[in-house]
Image (cartoon, rainbow, N blue to C red; front, side):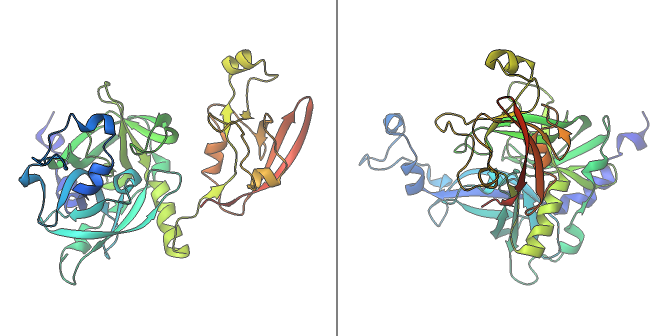
Length: 359
């Protein structure tokens, strides 16, 4: 391998590094103590009066805030707009500070959180002139729809919350992956679909950082790893964030469509287990403790869909575990119409569903 090939990422790293930021998450000690389960209280170190958790002085700043975590993000606009993961800025009781590449600290304003994807848009709050190189810092967004298996990629982020400006390279190992994960510790586990799989080394703290191609374009947002596995990481396609940026500019918020169904995708195993008449589609059913699959007053409810109905097709597309309702919804906007072929008992019919806005 030649020296030129060995340093193929060098110019891209040098150009992109100023756009990558660290987001520090802090909370007041009182708020942290409220979240401690009673059964764990006795196992923590306490102050002499036994009223508070004993936190080392160096861990508390001048405002009484305690750092509890960190994530990454990247500047996408000259005004200081930053994209990160929703789970990085999910706690309404926390305060967030952005550390830019020049070592400056800035407060941030949370502009929008995507109600579906693990994407958030924030803005650096700074005085005029505090970010003199912001024009050079803003990244260029690529097209994640053109990704190919084996394509080289580079991740930049704040590894483990300790090592800023950490870079790691790899290849695209898989496309349109689906995993089950909790976007934040307080949220229920949900399925995340359409993800980019890479073998790039990603660690906690890298969340929200950019995944780059050889052109220096951001094609993904690093979001998840599989603990216990090596070189198995996932990123949200950048096209999802590009759509959110357009929504925020045009509507002042992120608008995502609501269908109003809870369902389970059908495969041959589920057909056998539940004695279903088909081995494809989606059966409308809830998950404990909510057993009803249709959300009251939702578009699906208004279209007459009922619990235990099986959705066979949507706008002519057969529903399978590879092509689910969630995949189709990801391509739709508020107000779009879904013509859903429904199987109820032995009767098939078409339900017309007009998508509403998810709140």
